[in-house]
Amino acid sequence: MHIIVLENELSSQRGGQELSLFDVCHGLHKRGHDITLLYVKQGDLSKKYYDICTEVIKVNGYRIERKKIINSIQGFFRDKIKIKATTNSLIYSNQYHDSFFAYSLALSKNIPFVCHLRLPPPTTKTLGLQWSLGMHGAKRLIAVSNQTKLDWINRGFSGDKIDVVYNGINTTQFQPSDDIQITKTDWNINDDVHIISYIGRLDKDKGIETLLKGFDLFLQNHQNYNLLIAGKPLCQNEEYQKSLEKLTVDLGIEKYVKFMGHVNNPIHLYQISDVTVLASLNSEPFGRTIIESLSCGTPVVASWTGGIPEILTGEFRDMLFEPGNAQDLADTLNLVLKWKDRDSQLSMKCRNHVLSNFQVDNMVDGVEKVFLNFKK
Image (tube, rainbow, N blue to C red; front, side, top):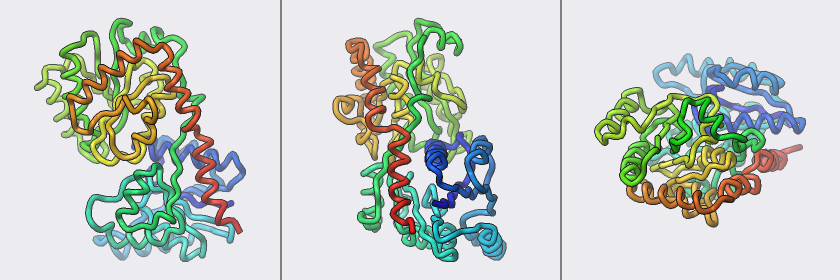
């Protein structure tokens, strides 16, 4: 098939949805599908896309801006002229924000449009005219979890139209370290220091305040633990990070917490960590960092929200805590770390859980299956 992919910024620094899209495109390319990529902004994934795409096209944007309505409409028409399609083509948008352009392009080319639901619906009662038109014009929707599917059903979308495809990762890339001590030395961390880590964007919905308060409570009964926070604000500004840094001072834990900024390759951080934490407050659609950490053999403490309980199933349910509850987070950290000391097989159990359920090929299989239903 010929798949016309819409992406905003070709950057791995924005979050898991950009990384997952590249993994999908790479997998589809390996299976012989032709990829045309549309993008708005360049980023560190640009070269990788050029290696796998038949064509890469820069567009002006995916929305008609009210303040620039004439230029936006003209840009829409100019961009559509650049894009070639056949009867075997399909439009694939990575997020609902781009659905209006995707649907209008699909109409003009008389080809189907599929949108990946990697985010919960917006919290306002309406999607907005452009997004609403675009999303209701999609032939199929792909949700990253059953909870995300339910969230969109509750916003008026038919469940019969939504397929669930869990995210997957390359488990040969995310794997345990052969020597944790050497890895710690590379990061200038003493062997006797234990690591709790957070990897992701520094935004309010990620519950970083809960994490810091929970870590403070945890430290009251533990020594030689540091909290490493890797990421930067995306929805919030730099002032938000400063407020988090101030919170560590107010709690008196500043010497135990390090804000590392964006880490290009978080694998070593997963490997040296005793546990990672995802303290999301909202309906987290999936939580890619959870399976990355588990694949590296590192257990995860995460809030019971959104699609997270669909990842941490079975005995891993004990790793879940109540969203926003700092004391429950601290108690769960304590439980999981005791579990790790008691069960020498926990690291392998974590990795095997991902090997069995969240391989990248499983994700590509699911997306490809949706696409092939449109093949003429």
